Length: 63
Image 1 (cartoon, rainbow, N blue to C red):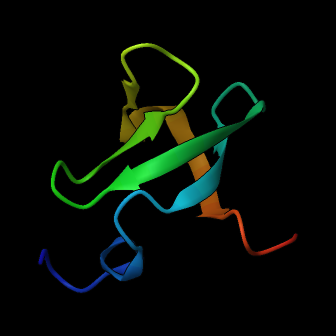
Image 2 (spheres, rainbow, N blue to C red):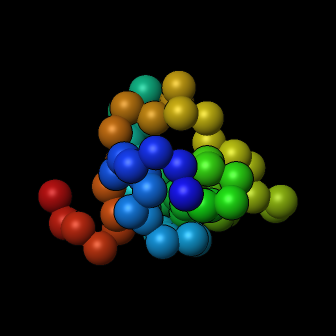
């Protein structure tokens, strides 16, 4: 496991909502193995670089 951070508490393949730098909201899922978010609606799943994410939250948490 990586250093303790909010990301280290996510489950593998946990669905999250990411607010991207352009203001759009996208569903992403977390990969503990790769330590990166992926867009699930692309084939193959495209990694979402951290620089593109303004903020994120688990999908189970309503704003």
